[in-house]
Amino acid sequence: MSVNWPMTSFKAYPKYQGHFLFLCVSPEQYTLSPSGENRAVSQFASNSGINQTWIGLFCFDNKNPSKCFYDDYSGTSALYDNFASGYPMVDGIYGGCVYTSTSGSLAGRWVSVKCEAESMPFICEMPISTYDASCPHNYNDFCYLKSSEMPIATGKFGDALKICEAQNGSLVSIHSKREIDYIKSLYRDQTSIRTILIGAQLVLPNLYSWTDGSNFESFDYRNPLSSASNNDNKCLFMDISSGLWSSGTCDYIGSSFLCKIPLSVVPTPQSEILSESNPSDFSKCNTTFLMAPGEFTSYGYLSTDPAEPPVYCTWQIVTTGAYKMRLFFTDVNTYNPIYVYAENGNEIERVRYSSSSVISRSNIVNVSFQASGRPGYTGFKAVVLAY
Image 1 (cartoon, rainbow, N blue to C red):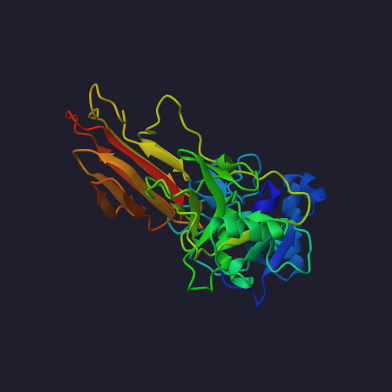
Image 2 (tube, rainbow, N blue to C red):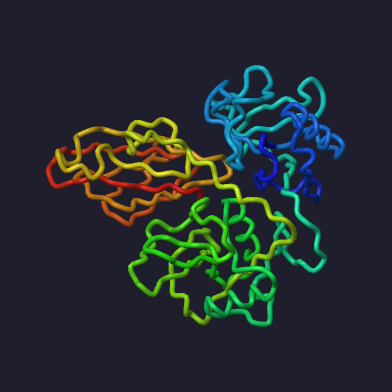
């Protein structure tokens, strides 16, 4: 449940009595007030015989709705919330996941609990799409056609593009983490396919363009550690396990690919909402709450006078409860190691080298670094993506 309607996704808890419940919303209903939306969802669940249901909200602080984030990256519950008295409460026996009741004194009220504490029904809010009986994979007003389901299952970039254009579409462009998750689901049972060719081409150094003309910069999920030094690597491939994009040759004849065909008037793609940064300090040193995706550096990164100022920095990096994070240390030139800790304080790794990546154990990770102040060291840079 989200203030910005069409792209909410919910955590994959077990099906309720063998059924998923889907709530589809027409454009006319976008004008519902948040309280009206809350009542509509509660009534929808109640009519389906559900007493409690998860909602797509995760909290990081006690009694502070502004620190509760929707898992569609649409923002926080600061402008509207309907928490029961005393909630959200995340410490101790409580937790950051949120559910709503549909009956009794707590009808329509929100309560936070540990994500693993209970298994309960959930409702998936789906984007409206145009029905097309000939479309095998229909999502958000587009039809997705896998090359493995077509007569020509693999091909070079140019050949794949022609095949997709013959279907009145183009090679797939991708504009949100939700779309990545959807594409990954299409290949869940195809173990023989590891990567797919997507519709992006290098037009200038480090600058890509989607073949369908949509805005590439609105969403960029390239693997930060992927090397693009080879001049022949002018196309992008998506790893269907991680969702990350890496560069490769456009002339590889064995590329699986995915076509994306508009089914109606297509809305302008919405980008993921990134955490705000202070333009005067890119390091975000001593940040207690850095929302992924994003990046951070050591204090005075790349400074030469003095090199690597002797400042101690910590970062608490978070994402919503349904995801872990992958930290990519793209540049490391430090005397002391960078420490990465799990939510419970246990050390995960000590990073000493560039091109290192660390996967968090939950949706919260802590990083600390004590710069030495020695000459010749310029610090580090890291990129964080939901995983």
